[in-house]
Length: 261
Image (cartoon, rainbow, N blue to C red):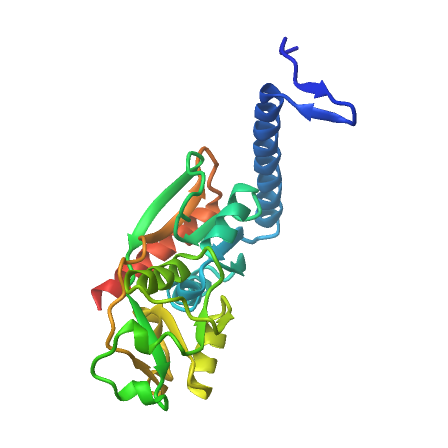
């Protein structure tokens, strides 16, 4: 039918040719669209608005996404949502495999972006944080050498925040901390800081929105470079369902309200 060779035979099994890889890519796209159409039709038939699967990085999941869901469920109670919280590299990979409809996060460094659309929402300022009981909470000036021996609570490689901390120690010509607890959970980070003398890094907005912020202290030390912008990430050439459009519009509206305060 196509007049080209789609697969080549190997001693064990077969392998797709470049033509075959292209056919497989677009076939997956078609099946994903058909599956999405079926789910939306079933939802509409039952009186629901539909379903949207959302990926969000931890900092945005506990702030912008939480506010968006609270507002959205008041105006659209029949909208069904599934939330996955992880680092941007994991979420974008899931998006590219059609496991998610939209990601609230950042484009990971080195990611293939030709099939992605990025709708920027803003930037975040990072800060170094400890519990209020930590002796460093009273410091007026610090350098990276004073923080090297502490136990750090950090995201796993290759998250942008982990990279910025590593770069800060590298720029100061100091070895990376040897005692590290890795987690993507904001609540785990905040709990560890409040109950121990560990140290962590998080967007300033997380601390400002946290009800127990009086139990934490932001240290007087600068972090460079800044995080890349965050925003809504979707697949290029994908049909946006009504549920997906409603969610994305609500994210924009909630972000505008928050910035206007």
